[in-house]
Length: 150
Image 1 (cartoon, rainbow, N blue to C red):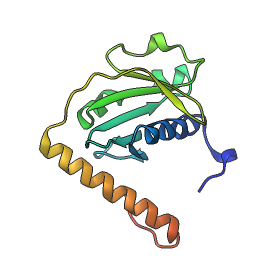
Image 2 (image 1 turned 90 degrees about the horizontal axis):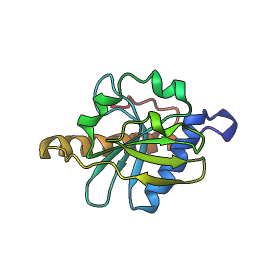
Image 3 (image 1 turned 90 degrees about the vertical axis):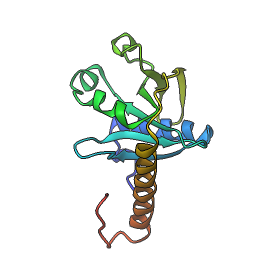
C-alpha cells in the first residue's frame, strides 16, 4: 500500500472520488481494465448495479493528451471527469459528468448523462469488477503470491 508521499496528483483525486462514491453506496476499484488497451482511473459499482467511470485529470496537459477517454463510454452507465478546483473546467465536454475532488473527498458538480449498458455487457463487467476486487484484496493479504489482474 503506497504512502501519501508516493502518490501522484491524479491518485489523490482518485482517493477523494472513491471516498465520495463510497458515501453514495458505491464500491470502487482504481486502475480497472474493462477491456484490453483500456484502463480507467476509477470504476464504481452502485447499489443498483450501475457502473460509473471516473477519469481523474490533474492538469490541462493530462486532459489534452488523453486520447482514449471516448473508448471508456461503452463500458459504463455514466462517465465523469474528476479534477481539482483550479482545473479549467471549460475544457471538459458538456455531455460528461463533472466531479471536483481533492485527496479527502469530492462533489458531483454535473451529473453525467445515463447511457445504460446492455445486460450481457453489464453482467460480464460486474463479474470482472468482482474478480478484480477480490484479487486485489488477496494481493494485500498475500503480497508474495503474484496474480494477473484479469
